[in-house]
Amino acid sequence: MSEPTHSMRRAEAHDVLEAARTWLDRDGRIAVATVVGTWGSAPVGVGGQMVIAGDGRFEGSVSGGCVEGEVIAEAEDILADGKPKALTFGVADETAWQVGLPCGGQIKVFVERLEKGDGLPLLDRALEARKNRRGLVVRTRLSDGRRDIFERKDALSDALVRQRFDSGESRLEETTEGEVFLHALVPPARILIVGATHIGQILAQLVTIAGYEVVVIDPRTAFAAEARFPGIRLDTEWPQDTIPKIGLDPYTAVVALAHVGHIDDEALKLALRSQCFYVGALGSMRNHAKRKERLKQAGFSAEEIARIHCPIGINIGAQNPQEIAIAIMAELVLALRGPKEWKRA
Image (tube, helix red, strand yellow):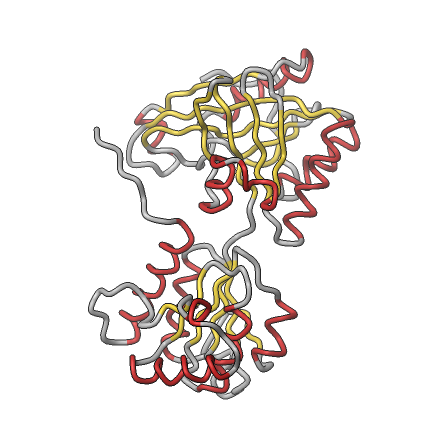
């Protein structure tokens, strides 16, 4: 593959949005490359981005190294004339192996120019939404780069946009306007594990492996100890005190594992009247019946109480803490992503 005419220089900070904001403010224009489609193996998923400054400096990735040089070369022309372009690359098998893929594939990359006038408000809005854990969906028409921005409250009348908020996945759609890319800029899923139990130890590791954020909450300091949860964020306040500080949003789940009523119940009371995407609690059917009665006495309706997943986790016949944690993790992914729609070949 061809190489750009200048040497490729990465930014010092590894944050695409921050780099884009800094360079746009400095130079007045930047190029942004976005992966809008993949077929077969792809080292960078749909929605992955790379920003290119006028001096050739770049941050981010669209292919893990396979086609960055060609994208940067194309970005030079787009920075000059402002015309967006969709580029399609085939990743050969031998090249794919070099970046850790089992086989080749194909990627489609949309490259556009951002100018200071409209680009800075867009980037500021995206950075603010990320900081405050508010999702955005950016709808871009590939033919001309026309862009619309949606917040969750704006998506009620647009089914395609609403699906992106619900799934958190970006997607290229064929519409009457031609190809439209729906870029889901949503915060990472965050799992609040209430109860630093054995199951909680394993679940916290699985959540981290999945790439989600995790907080383990337990006022029992003997349980919530660094030695038991190395590298995991711990909070030893009572759930009713700390959860309001953390905040509950549509990208947060609450998993009650303390198996102690006065700890689990307080977390559940907050979760049931929030927009969090999942509420689960450990316990037998007998214990859950008692829990439901306590919540009913506290003023919760049958519909609210029915949000609790109990028995917790997908029914895989789990028996030991490791298997139960796996079952819970699977149910969390299902609640976040929804079942996969398989297409016939």
